[in-house]
Length: 275
Length: 161
Ligand SMILES: Cc1cc2nc3c(=O)[nH]c(=O)nc-3n(C[C@H](O)[C@H](O)[C@H](O)COP(=O)(O)OP(=O)(O)OC[C@H]3O[C@@H](n4cnc5c(N)ncnc54)[C@H](O)[C@@H]3O)c2cc1C
Ligand code: FES
Ligand code: FES
View 1: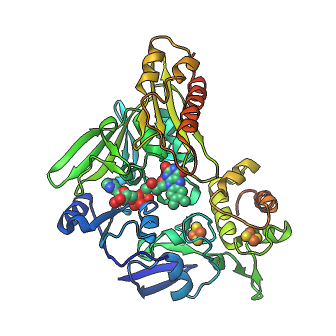
View 2: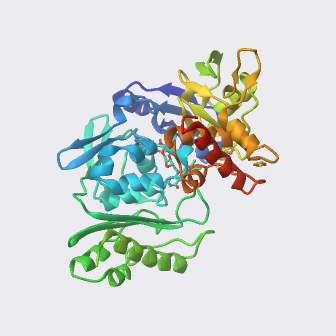
View 3: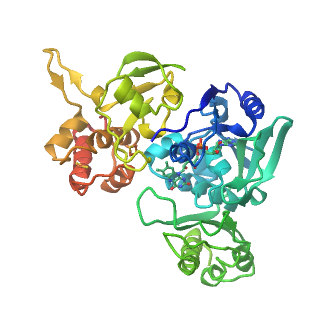
């Protein structure tokens, strides 16, 4: 399978990429790692007539400490997250989640910015950064804006990003020693989770997000509120699906997903160290 | 678009259509048919090659994305001895010795994924090898001897393969 014909433009900076996309309107798409976009183009589910390649913008490939958060360039690849000593120390949940994305070949190419911008509710990094309370930085023709992860996802493969905006940085608060867990239930190796949970717990504070439990990743604030009120991990986990609208599809039905969400959340909370 | 890729140490410059996939560029334009296409949907890993030393699925990379990069395919692993005879890469030798293949269709991709795996994890456990090869499907062997081959190669080379 070969994608439809398109024009290929290599951007030499984020600003250039944004102006190229703006110039070509709806017909243009950014190309980062290509590991969501190219499979869609091969299946003709996406047919952009212009691709603006940002995959080689080395200046947007970094993980660094920045006060109370870790700043991650949007073009940082999944494999970079796995190996980052900064993440291992300050946001180990994100490094762990990255090891669960696809397979090594996918992780050598795919980027955190592409994964979040793609807004697939089944993906690992959107939910994980949501659980961690991340902020995404988008750059457009008129400057940059900061978007809290909790306000970013709008529906299946849909976010608040404008077509001429580009994610340039992901800011993840440092975990400050929080316990954490990543639970992903798959039927086949290398696959997206049928249901998954990313969670951290530190004293009475926690963050729990579910993936593939609706058209967006779901922040289970009910679970965190129950934990803060002193509920046990088992009791809090009963609320895991309360804010979700899980789909029924070939992999699993709605009831099964609801059950899985509770089981995986309980495991996650116990592993993360909640009582 | 004009694309220059160093494949197995030799520069290749060609005019390519942007939509050309790297695997087709390698097989059809450059004539290196060792890299196979299995699924064409990023799942099976038969098309695995290295870009700048890291394993990738060449059915999911555009040739233009590899412009200026170094690509290694299965044909680039063996070396030539002083007397002119070919010397298989230790991973290829291990696959032979451990019988890590049957029909051989997945083998070029398996070997390329395995060499990239050992470059990142020189001393893997069996579990590391199994998860490190999760992007590569084999319909014949049941994986047992493939894993044995990678473990044998790691042991034989002290992780320097
Ligand atoms: C076999 C396979 C298995 C996979 N398994 C998993 C899995 O288990 N879990 C998982 O989470 N993911 C999985 N993935 C997806 C993978 O993580 C992708 O890398 C990721 O979803 C997209 O990142 P990318 O850099 O490849 O983006 P691309 O494919 O290049 O782009 C995706 C979309 O985002 C847009 N975009 C890219 N970068 C930006 C940016 N900086 N700003 C704005 N828009 C941008 C593009 O225009 C496009 O619409 C898998 C992929 C494959 C091929
Ligand atoms: S042919 Fe590329 S992954 Fe199967
Ligand atoms: S040996 Fe036949 S597919 Fe692996």
